[in-house]
Amino acid sequence: MARLRDGVELEDGPTAPAKVRPVGEREIEIVLREGRNRQVRRMVEAVGNRVVALQRIGFGPLRLGDLREGRARRLSDGEIEELRAAGSGAE
Image (cartoon, rainbow, N blue to C red; front, side, top):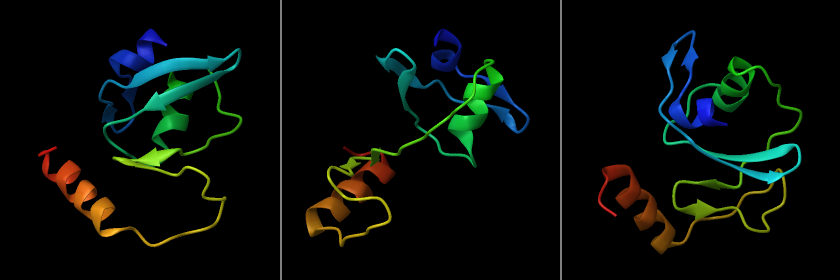
């Protein structure tokens, strides 16, 4: 987990450090500040493990909550503003 926290070297360059914490015996939560193609899987493989299942629980300031897999919903005006603020770095 320390290697994931520090960032790992991938074929397309080093990753930024990630927040990593255990949430079960064989389960971790990873928070990324960047999002490259298949990044979580590649980071975990780079440290000698493999991903069996992967679930996104949020994006920026948004959390999926009880939104079912494959479903979508409209964002509120407030959520759109939160995303804009997060993208500009002004929180």
